[in-house]
Image (tube, rainbow, N blue to C red):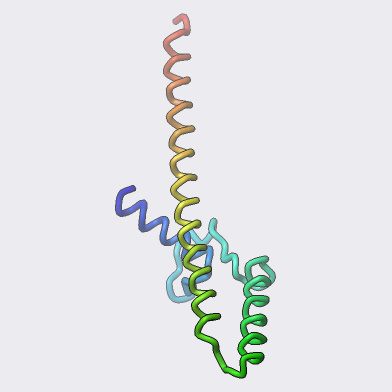
Length: 115
């Protein structure tokens, strides 16, 4: 992937994870890529569960925050980022592969027609 493709990949990830303040940084792509952590979305509900569990564990340990729990959450978020980036790359690869296959069929079909 070239630099502009990587930039788009990063932008899609940031939009999907709600990392961009669209009021301050409006981008056209936000019409197509929705924040999966927005209110009512499944990721928002799951993240709230994670937060609630984090608080309960910390309370049970008698701490405001537990470093191990924080590290666990950070590691899972990094796994999420890696998988999202890979899925983008795979989607891009298969989309280009499909277009190439279509073009090859089209060229072959055009060569077989009587004019």
